[in-house]
Image 1: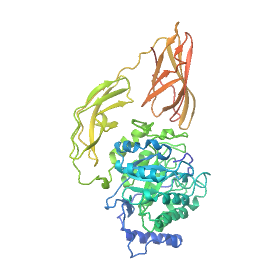
Image 2: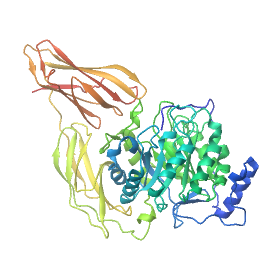
Image 3: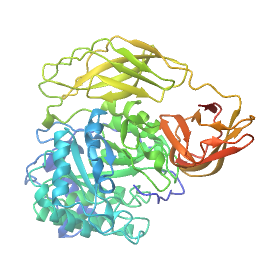
Image 4: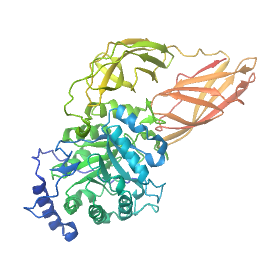
Length: 561
């Protein structure tokens, strides 16, 4: 992912989907070989000749435009991007991503050219953690981002050097690992070299003994608005002697209509070329991608997607965080949409059969026991329940807010108790619990329980709050919250609360301490702002993330000790 994107001047037209019969590997190799010949590529781009079998499938592989497991079963990526290279201490996020329902994770690594090198031991540990958490691991090297336009970026040839240097951590892991050659390997300059550079990297890795499925990102900061990958993909696929190249398109502002999304993806599926959406978001500085259409159309076409990203974004795109500070109990609006919404992870992800998903274990856990409410505040409720049972093992529980027939997953845990945060004050909530096992089987719903949140702190007559947006920019804001003492005596200790309308998160503050649970914000004073003299005021400044629609909250409440 990068903040630099360019949107084409005109949208591409709509193409209807066509149902295709999956071709065999030998036939596909022959067809792609013909494409390479027509395109005029030399011997380095030759596929297996017609009549000769392509290389035998090893682990994850592609066939007939589909991504398959070693046993021939379809595997549809449903996962999340995780920024490991920048947050190496957050690898436990893989466990949380699995608990949230994903079947795969795309992990950011680094060659050492732009960010600290992910060495053999680190890569080995990442793969180990992916396997321990039953996730298919897409490993990408990020230093290539924007090559040709970004001066610090490195070439795909340099990325191939890196992959060969960590080969010992990857050989033998073909059932579990997809190697993503390089993230967004060309910007908006020099992208004409994408096909040759990608073919070269594929050739070097195959010559070095890599038998993994290789993922090739598009140029133009991943969005291929010039249709370079779309035009040259067949020839690039034909150059892979193993025939296992999976193409990856990143969908941000260029893909803001369903017609554009469907047109691009079906241009690959109709040609029998495997493709996945390797990154996408609900918003971006270059436009407003249609995430609903991306998720719906990939589901209709049986294509994979990997959303950007779990947490840790910066540089004005913090709104792309799915969790607040890597906390799976604090999903952002984007996180709730991505994991729990229509065509999202919970609704569509199926565990790889190499881990047992879709295999012999089809027995769901029993329903958890009836939950009880053990604690309530004005913005949270703590629940506990008797454990479910399973013929193999229960691996987690999902807590839902229930409204009639609708269920909204609000918390995930491996235990039998959880605190649901981000609730509205003075509101009735109905909760229920479902259990999950390692094969992805989900239990019947438990009995429901109702909790009513408190009214929150009582306002003080002498404590008058105000809120002002000082400035905003795409993806961020600066604001000030002031507390005035309108009484005749000093105020010694105060608390300010409000609720954001949604999608805004405070990142930094001065003059006080800010805590946030979902959309509910609480401010307490610093030592030097604790006492407000009669007729005086104090100000707490803050910066945060979210779109530019932030305005003063309508429920500001100031209370005193």
